[in-house]
Length: 450
Image 1 (cartoon, rainbow, N blue to C red):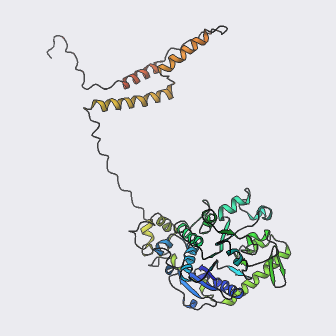
Image 2: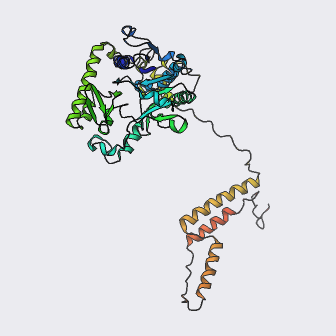
């Protein structure tokens, strides 16, 4: 079994804890870390329990890795490299049959023995955030979207599938799934909560619609995370920790130093104690790993080659230029290149249309008809003038109705048209008349030589 994860240099200590916990319960597994940096830090060349470290630029996922990565800031870019790393290990370790991806903050607490049974019938295994409807379990005060059902707020922002864990076996459906996922995150792996995009994770919820042999793994012990604690009651049986009476396989230590306590406070006291005990075990192991100098290393792709920090606006501008192959390596440029506002070029004046000439009476008649039509529409809308055919039809119908037996013969007084309407009619009549080819010459006066 190949177990992989992607990370930056700052989160390598967490990746080592994940690797140690995996080796403890699955001794024969191979750990491959995808490091999304330009080089491996000096102190990280020999990490315990790690079998291989591969740089992102060496995964050979895209034709131009640097163009791909320039679109994203750290978390977006690292998450979008997950399918590249799976593609890398799938091709390199061609004798392996099982591949597992885990986030660096995953903590393996027991053997993943259910995977073998599921791989007999399915090629790809994904884990949902919840295995039951979440509404009965979530405290209202935790949500920023209190006025809406939980599914609308949480699932719209984060999706129904969590990207912290997935497993696949060597199979044509799995290979197609990896290639499809790579194409999706090549340009659409960023965070946009209003549009529902959550980096690479957004696309996983559609996988079952596009590919066969995909299973949503509903075992409560996989991807046991703070947001689903209340639906999966934690307990302890000796040294084994349980979730809904099933062994916890993977504990997702998301926000272990931040929102962990916020979710834990909503649990009963006995469950709070279990969560705190697991966290203490994890933090103690994290402190024992060392490599404290790595957590201060800033992501190298936050800077241009010159050392200038990349502004997020520059990344957004580049997204529209991603397919422009004439553009050089974006890391060799600067913010000024992407953010300088140049005045738009002045458009050339339109060329005269030779079809409309002064001597072309036919074209002039068409133009006059168009002007008359627009003028008539305007007058009908603003002066309540009816065309003659409608007025005659209406008046005839009204006269017939008034002549019916038993119908009161109320006299209909017709209002005299106002001067404005008379003038409007003259205007329409004049506009409808085609312009004459030549001006009519005035008749010579009597007694005057022409």
